[in-house]
Length: 193
Image (cartoon, rainbow, N blue to C red; front, side, top):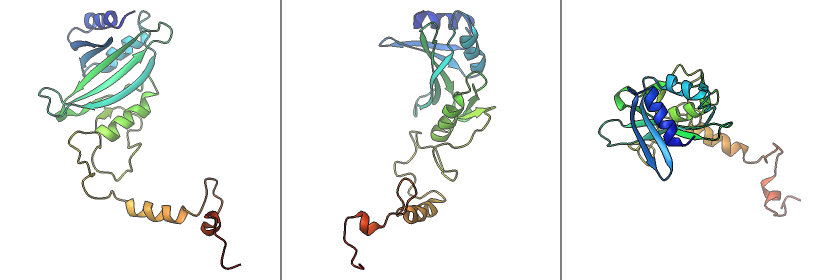
């Protein structure tokens, strides 16, 4: 099935949820409201004509300055048995920056939703373990937001100094944890011998 056909069926099934259908260079995106995202994606997953059983990717997008809705969560779906695909883009307003988790449909969404939460700051309701995954727990802010300062706010995150000190202590070990004498490693004759 072609992506525009899938988009048409989504629009027929959820007419009050589809905001727009956009096509660009052969790729189709169905923009939906966030309210029934689990219901929409469950239908795309379970319907025998769709069988979009593979969540290829999930990410957050920040449209800073856009008048209506600032954020989107983008779901790239693929059907392994039927070999078709579609992109679903759920709108997430800045003043209500959360959306329901889809880990009940694809367990692999767990990691993607945590990454989106960590880097963009979108909260996923009913997520089994929503916490930072790439940045330290003490990190302030969300680096993929367009208004995040380029220098990270000019201050180090809590725990930064401890990590730097620990890395200095561990530099003398190689990848396998074997102590490497820095002088011999550099190929310099030890003056003590």
